[in-house]
Amino acid sequence: MNPWTSYTRARADARDVHLRGVDIVIVVSCSLATLALLGPARWAPGSTRSAVHFGIFALGPLVLRTLESYFPRQRLLAFVASFWLLPVLSLSHELLSPLVTAVTPVLRDAQLAAMDQRMLGAQASVVLGHVVPPWLTDVLMVCYYGHFVWPLAFGVMLYFTGRRDAFDEYLLGLSLFFAFNYLCYALVPAIGPRYFLFHEFSGPLRGVWATSYLDSVMRMPPFARDCFPSGHTGGALLVLSYAFRFERRFFRVMLLPGIGLILATLVGRFHYATDLMCAVPLVMVVMGLALGCTRAAARREAVARPVRMDAIVRP
Image (tube, rainbow, N blue to C red; front, side, top):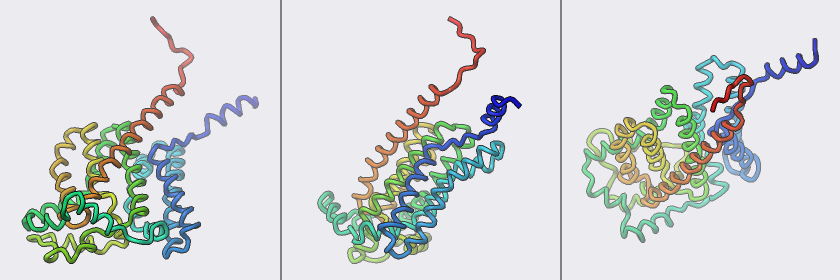
């Protein structure tokens, strides 16, 4: 066989692995977390377990995108590769404790509460506890759990409607937001007003039928130093912003529940007002980064796109 022919066939059989922006964020951030947990943070309780999980998260996109390149017709494999961010976000939150302990072992609630006091002259969650009726507290607490639904629902809608460019930019923005969000948890750990200001409240959070149960569920997470900035507020604003750009019908459906979700972070005593305000610039920054990276990638793809030898250029 002609050596050149063999080389050409080998090149044709080679599979190109294409990592998306969200894949790169996952690989880099989870790899850094793994190295930190195996290095300077190895003394923190639970560091080995967290390091193993973050290592698996980092390998996920590399393995899945490689398999996808070899089996391009397997739609389920493509779906899992595209939504690898989902298990990473849902499972990594509870693995942050060793990192946070190693980076900032003291709580910053006193500073956050003091900032609220200087800006507002009061604690927002305490004031709202006196004016929001129990029935509305129920509604807002239900909205609060929409944090786990809206980002996934919007991503699935973009994916199955073939909006690939919008889907990639959205997931990149979402992954960047939570990467920076989790970093802020490590730099400014806080447990929130429901614990730090418990003596300021007249009693437990009151509702009509659902509040007591929903509130109790949120008191049992393995990691609770996750106040600054508000991931619920930032996530809701991020999804609303992308929905306004890419799918106005979704935006209209989510608008009121999304506003209720943000209000619930204060009414439910989960966050200080400072947490909410600081989430806004973070959302703006990550959306700008995602847009810039997406446009840069599109320009590189356009330049690298091959031109057929038989193409005819007409005036």
